[in-house]
Image (cartoon, rainbow, N blue to C red; front, side, top):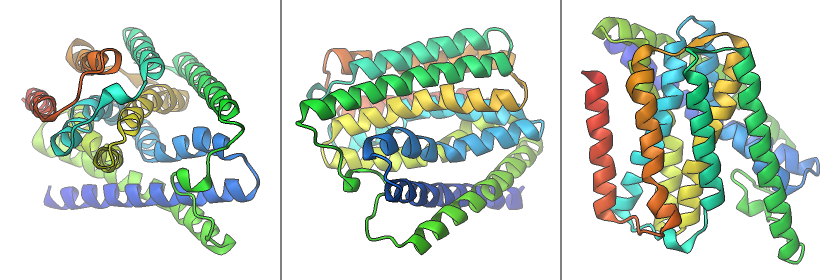
Length: 318
């Protein structure tokens, strides 16, 4: 099992690095082609940062281990709230009263409840995948309209390239091609290593593949969101901290499971229906007073979030 742990860490590292390179290459390629920065932000960056989770889920479905893929999505959403917000709150107070994320938060809750209702059918199949992707289309269309209105109200000022994740006007075409190619090649390689080693670990320790997806894989794929949230908290950018978590959770549910459901059926384990999905919903509801009442997310709340997450992991593993 020691080698499987090594391969799991190696696969996760390759996934994260490849995902970062793909975002950088795809963003700069799109900008060079004249695609508006606003469109790049809403599509290329969003899909690119979700690529590692998407590849893991698709690979798991193809390998006959859909529990890892579904566990990764559900576990990541729980980790995004309790872990990805908890750690930055311990480092720096997050002033949620200085940003307005009510609209996107309501959409995230709606997406979560819609996802839960589909999960109650017992499995995600291609009709569910189409429904989830249709929901993603609604979210993207709404984000586009809001961004366009904001741009118009700001006297036509578009987002600068430097404000887009991965944008770098100094990159040559050769480096753009290199980053994109390495990213595209690295993602499936990392997914192969992580999924295969996770299956072996699950068998070795006698736990289900879903548990591995909810814990090891979910925490690993939440690391980019954690890094982004910590840096945003240090810069006092509460809107970025909350927006990062809310946006990631919506994409996980609507995009990743939506696409994976078109590849093959994804059964929903009974234990996930009884416990993990409700924990995911509960973690999302915990954000309501911070979003609507402007409660300050300080160190006490950060410690409480981390304690709740630690307790959840213990319950899952036992």
